[in-house]
Length: 128
Image (tube, rainbow, N blue to C red):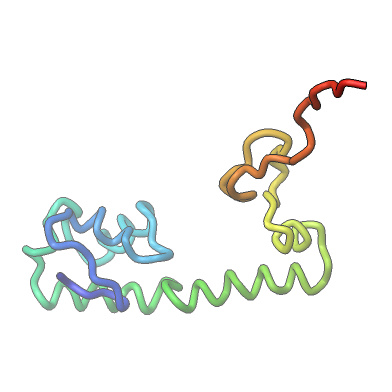
C-alpha cells in the first residue's frame, strides 16, 4: 500500500478513486492533482512509480489542506461558533442539525437512536 499524507491508500484501486481516501480530497481535487502531475487517473496505485507518488505528495502538501490540519481547522470553526453563542453553535452543542433540516421526523443520524417516551400507553380501567 502506498502512503500519501500519512494515509495508506489501497493498491488495487485507480489513482483517481484512491486519492479520495485522504480526508479533504474529493473527486474534483483528485482530478486536479492528477492533471497537474500528468498522471492518468485510470492507472492502478500498485503500478505507480516512486517518483510519481512523490510528485503527488508534493502537490498535496503545497496546494491542499488535508487530514489532521484540516480537522483542526473544522473543529476550530465549530468551537468559535459555540463560544460566540450563535444559533449554529447552539445546534452543534445540542447535537441537532445546524442547516435548517426538520427534526420532527427524520434527523436520526444527528439525534441518535429513538427513545420511546414512557407513560404514553393507555391505562387499563380499574374496578371500583
